[in-house]
Image (tube, rainbow, N blue to C red; front, side):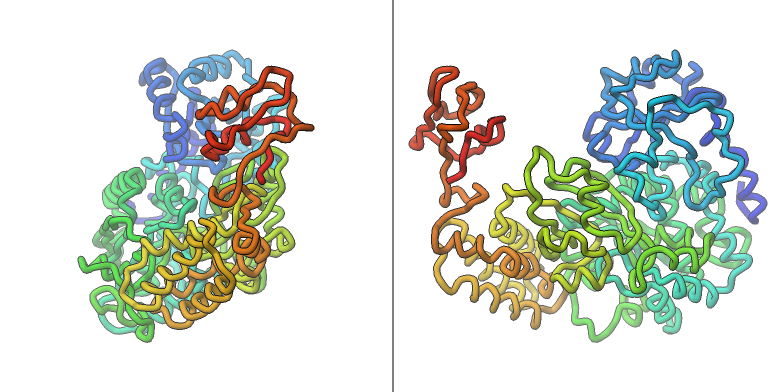
Length: 633
């Protein structure tokens, strides 16, 4: 069937809404994004399909990730007259008991994450609640009341975890492609540009440039215009774009189609990391299904609008996340940036006007068209509108993917949503913006998260990576780690970046290995300033951020490494050793049992001894001791 009108789309939507909200059979949705699969979801899925083959009255289906990666594998079960219950840590050995317990009304409380009050997202009217006749289960919290979720507002992630990413019908049932049909039949291209401008949407890939202005500038250029999606997500600890592509690929395709309609483009490309095979697989399926329905290709939805999308996979070069390097790679050339005095909206891919946005930016576009610019602009702050997705990782209890309104504080993200630092350890810093971001100390935890505020403290929004660090993190080593990453990822084209990063890293290595000397801190500051001023592209100009912010906020650690030859966090091995606290040691013998070098001796219930000549400083004893009897000296 080729979709020609809003009526055709509505028919498909109505046909599949019951499957989403009130299925005739019991439906088991298993989170099958990369995070779930890594935790064992694939085995749970296969086991469930084995127990309940097709036609057995139980539908076993896949979904994307609902964000709470710490609790994977996540399984949602729902039935026509039964509540929607979401279970956590459901590995293959638990899946059968979980499903049977649900059928029997015996909800395994210790496995339950929560129940859903209303499965409708931000695009659907919360009226005529499809669960109104279903009695909630007592003593099970609603998902939106759980601290991890209750401050989130999901726009870009609106469908992730709630639909089968391989089903275009389920996407349509969630108002998918309605925005595209409106822009084809009801909204002129110039008005689309006006809506995106008025919404205040800024690029979510790192630069934060106003999306509407970029689109309008590209639309004014002559020649063949290209729409490009940057899915070359390379920041350590960042996986926002991957999760959207794995959980809701059609939202990105629809966003690109609307951009193409606004700009006057007939050709598009999605540049994906080759390390994202599942995302590529689901994109391929989504593109084929969109073409079958006449929503992609020639004469889209019965109009004269044509648009084709190709997928290109990158080899994993971090620098190819930079727009000009990405376009060079798309052309089959080495991915090297060029000077920015000519903008890509004027001369980009193949020297043609090219509009590039990242995955999250495009995923927001259909929602803005359907709900309006004023709705989106009503979220966030004066200069940072809407919501932002973050991958919350590191030393935090609730790791996962979150989407929050701009302007929320770092404290709310780390402590309310993330649950704070585990094991009763103290918070030390949070890094935003990936390897080119800055490390923000505790005194700025109440800082509102938006583009301007983060820049003021030496960090950046970036694509949305957020890494939490605790008392056991050495900030000098953190700076060294990220600079080592950037040294490997630099294209080497310009001398300031190629040589500057190398020299800064050499100084940091000396400091961490006990060879630091007076003047090293000042040298790092001087080299960092040179990199910021003279590097060709954003990789080089932002590379010093982790070093300069750790010097600014944690200078005492640098000085201790250099002058006292000490690493108080116990990370830089040449600068510390472990000792046993004679007053705290209970003689429980756990540290001695776990030491791989047999470096700890002593009888049970008596003071133990740590033999320095055998100790390799692996930290196993430190982590194992429940009485804080292992000291870092």
